[in-house]
Image (spheres, rainbow, N blue to C red):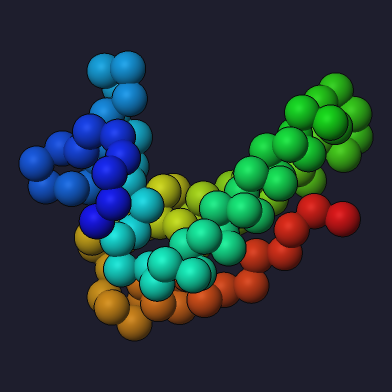
Length: 97
């Protein structure tokens, strides 16, 4: 695994500024993880662009979908079977626009 934020000993969480956040599923192939992270960042930019408008909800839903695909939200990846994990990250997560 590459250098990054501090992790809990079980690898399930990253620790940033003393706060635990669910870690990305380590089983996701690197190319798919990179793609999902690009989609997530695009949706986060959309949240900023659409804040306070009728489009904001759709932008936030896009962030949620990308984070679920990465294993950072939804059913914890360590509680899923290998097939469930693969199905989660292979789900189509469209980017904004």
